[in-house]
Image (cartoon, rainbow, N blue to C red):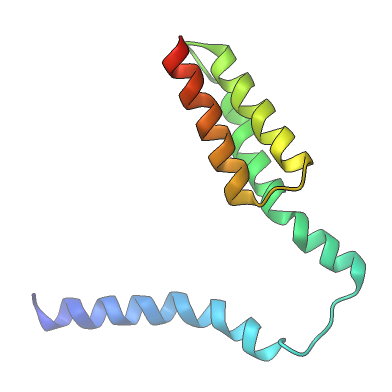
Length: 101
């Protein structure tokens, strides 16, 4: 492998790591008000909804596939599951549905 490519990979890694690391280091002792903690806690679910819901309206083959995925994700999120768990539950439900039908 060319050394230029290796240095580019290292540089790209630093460019993506530094903006993620800086807020943790700079604001590690800052306590956010409860309102902002609640807002930031719900950002992953809002992003997940923004990605899933539009896709439901553009399903061509089986509309129930989208509806079941959305409902299973909604129920898991409503019960307070972690975002990763919400996605895994939705995938599991759709996998079972695909096997049955």
